[in-house]
Image (cartoon, rainbow, N blue to C red; front, side):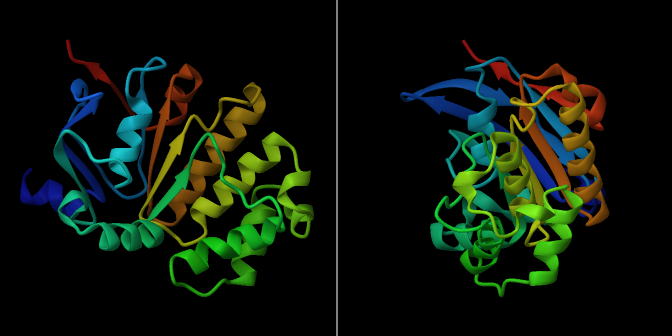
Length: 221
């Protein structure tokens, strides 16, 4: 990677290969993603795109290669340092939303700050929920909202700590065309407005027109 490319990329992936049951089965093409830009990782079910997203998030170690976010190599950090970095600089939106069902929507966003060692910001909570069209759910328990509403709460939580990168796994999977386009537009607008990069792992071809670039997972025999 050249110095110019390194200086402009908020996230860079190099030589990333993935293993399953001790066997290397997929590779992610090398890429650099500047702040405010969006990328879709495309692939069929089982192709490794969700596993790649976990490697980019510093959660599941790749078979080889590394990921740099803000010029820091994730897989050269200690596990505690990687966890702390993830909490503050990486926003996550996964298929299983992992909301705390026994507390309110607002409390779920506040927990994102506390888990990263930050102070919850009530104004930030209100701003994100209103922007996502779910401001009326502030005090509603997370187990009493719909799947689509929970998806929006998960997006708000991912954005809460103003991350450098937002990683989303199949965010449009449960949405109709209009709702999918609205959510993608919101993800792009929110991440771009805060100078963050957005990566979406998906098999949903509707995402292609909504992002700046795409790459395909490569299967390895």
